[in-house]
Amino acid sequence: MTFRTRTTAKPTRRRAHHDDTRRALFINISFGLAILAAFSVLGSIAFAGYYGGHFVAIGSVNGQSINKDDVSARVAVNLARFEREIDDYGQLRNQGKITSAEYNTVVGGIKQNETQSTMYSDALNQLTQEAMLAQYANKHGISVTDKQVDDQIVADGTLDEQRHVMVIGVAPTPTPPADVPTPAELQAAQTQAQQYHDDIASGKATWDAEAKASNAGSVGATGTTGDLFLNTKKALKLDPALVDAVFNLKAVNDLTAVIKCSDGLYRFATVTEITPPYVDADWHTVIDQNASDGAYRGAARAEALQIAIKNSIDAQYVTGPSDQRHVLEIGVSAGYGAAGAGDEVKIKMMLFAPDHGTVDPSTLDPANDPAWKDAKTRADAAVAALKKDVTQFATLEKDTTNNDDQQWTTSNGELPWLPQSIFAGDATQQQGLGMTATGTAVFAAGLTPNTVVGPVQETTLGYVVAVFEARRAEPAQRISDAMLRIASGTPFATEVATSSEAIDAVDGGDLGWVTHYSLTQDLEDAIFQTPVGGVSRTVLSSGYYWIFKVVDAQKDRTPTAAEAAVLLPKVFNTWLTDLTNHTNIWTDQTGLTSMYPAASAS
Image 1 (cartoon, rainbow, N blue to C red):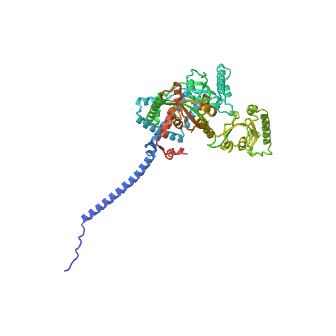
Image 2: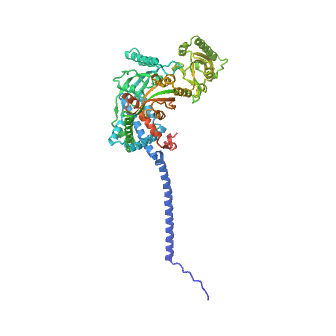
Image 3: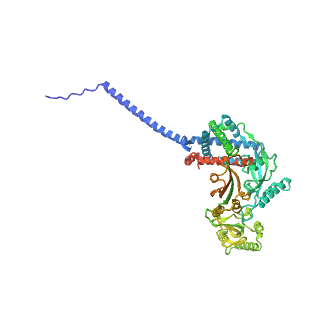
């Protein structure tokens, strides 16, 4: 059988056209899909960029995120508020209610908060704290109403009454080498402060003269006139009793009474200006023009909520009944050296420098330069005078035409208790006093009180002449010795008198009644973990070694009005610190820095 191949039929014109159409359709679909894919990729890139610039978390509080848009919105709110505050102070200046100098100082302080790093870090810190407090409020059923928010906005737009405050203070001066003043020395300080007060009140002396005589600048005020500048009652950083007295003054130039402050100083104050509250009626409108109303209202709500929480905490620990302990304390200063730095000495000194310190002594030849020889002559004369009568030190030290020391003049040449390591180092780099040779001399064995030491040559300074006052064991050893003596039967009050350097040592170490959040957490733990009649473990805190004796305890004791006034400025802040320490907080500092405007990122 013969097989023949079948002939393939020729395609018709219609079929060819149909295939072309299909081919074109597939090409178009493929091209469309490619375009969609490209747009998808571009969209993904754009979304990722937008998300990274706006929604990416830059911080979190217990898992609750804070994103870049949140921070940017708060920065805008803060900036708008700062600028409006500047305008408001400008109105006060134009109305003659504050001086141009006062305006410049206040505005300068506000503008320091407008730097890029400060603006963005402050905004993130605010949002972090607000999230933490909001979580606490939700847990404890604390909320604020819309009216409270409205009231907060009005308060934001109000400059509180301001007073230009001047302060004079007198510090009790313990007789070296003692660190704690005696009752007689306390009385002398109070008498001196009262004398300054009375001389000003009677017109016998001017404020500036008495402030300079009292060295007001060294007792917490700014400058030799004790000028604390414009302050609101909330902002004035003084003892609460003195703050109340300042804002109770009826007229400019009136004087408060002399008040013993919690730091042991006797102070009184006056006011040179009283600026009444200033209400900015357009505050909210202007802030809205420069920042989102929602963002500003959110910030105001957070402020109102913080006030509500503070009121709740104060009601628990300041004005209401709470668990309290009556405590005595012994405090030993940890000193200026690291733990284990060794014994400490107490000296007073003068310095006799080549050319009275007008040139760098290290650039001169100590063996041949006339300036060095002159310094040695002056130092030898001081040593000779002191060996005849060491009480002449006060007179010689005050002679600034001869004594070239400028570091210790405000303390009459007295240095604090120091270990030998602090005398060494490079004084210009603040690693020590730069007086290695002096340190060796004053730590020599066998020195007795009032021994004159020197002249000691310090090649970077000149000749040092010192009077040795005392030597004692390092702080850690002294607090351990005190603990051992108490454990061996020495009465706590006796050990207070012999060992404590705390302000209240003169009062028997009586710290008074302690409530929760009135002290730092480490001190509070030591006190509340100690039974009544017991003595606590040693705690190193705030630059002191502490031990406490709990003499009484009450579960539901209400602070007195005086105690509440002292507690009020610190309980909430201590509570807030404790809450922060127990909150899981994360911030992205690198991400925060990337938000700074490019022109200001540097």
